[in-house]
Image (cartoon, rainbow, N blue to C red; front, top):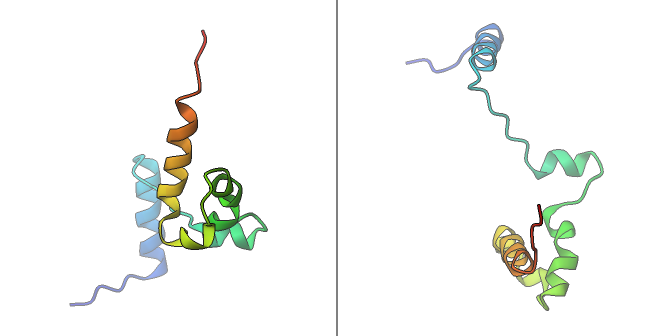
Length: 81
């Protein structure tokens, strides 16, 4: 069983997914870091400090840190129409 596809076939698969609105691109942090933007850790240093947390101890779960910060501050947010 050969699961290897050639470039032309891969482009065809991607093109088909694009035109059928089924294409999703995942770009990880490595892409933004290479472009000179912040890493997750750098981005969350100030929110962690605001929560009196040591960012170096939170490295294993930065998504939860971001969610916790959001949850804490969204409760003080009022929408007005």
